[in-house]
Amino acid sequence: MHASLLPKYRGAAPIHWAIINGEKETGISIIKMNTLMDAGEILLQKHLAIEAADNAQTLAEKLALLAAEALIESIKLIETNNAFFSPQDETKTTLAPKLEKKHGVINWNSNAAAIVHQIRGLYPWPGAYTYHKGKMIKVFKARALDYPETNPGIVLAISKEKIVIGCKEGAVEISELQQENGKRMGVRAFTCGHKLHVAEHLG
Image 1 (cartoon, rainbow, N blue to C red):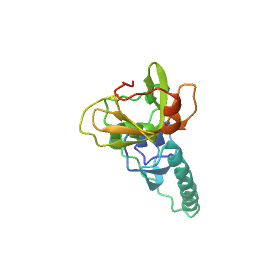
Image 2 (image 1 turned 120 degrees about the vertical axis):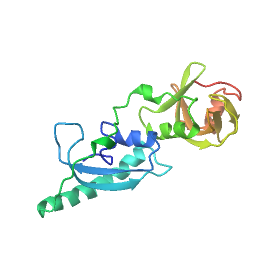
Image 3 (image 1 turned 90 degrees about the vertical axis):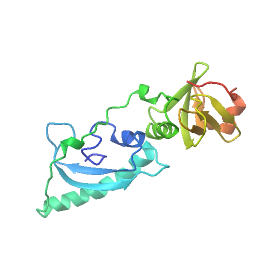
Image 4 (image 1 turned 60 degrees about the vertical axis):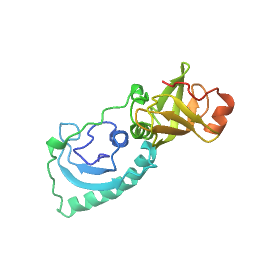
């Protein structure tokens, strides 16, 4: 059982990389194991839409339920001699390598949508993060905004509910974050205890 629509996202972190890469759909694959990584013949696949609000944790929970359905259905196919296995199309193979902490570094020279995909895909671990005056800030919730100017890493606006950071294309509106050695919190609580100002640079 593998948490992707094989041959896409073979490897250790298929759920995370599907979100990071902005996929709209993923699913479950039931395969016959062979000596190669996630390359066995496919018995059954079930598809699942990736919602805009999904992160790696919520998507994993949804896929776990779908996997249970797929497993029961697969067992019935085998029991009734209706199990037919199809080879994977090797030309469509993509990889989902093991996550490392370095994958969490936010590059503000990316476009806003890609950064938000990264934040969602790396929750809860390793988490997406940036730096302010040498201290790490983890970002847990954010959304992409259209913004006419290019201001990578620049704080564009701060209010009680949001912090807006410029990107190469668009801007990222942050609503939940955590400074190094601090607690996870909303922007209102964060701005009460941490000095962050418009026009400052993150990264």
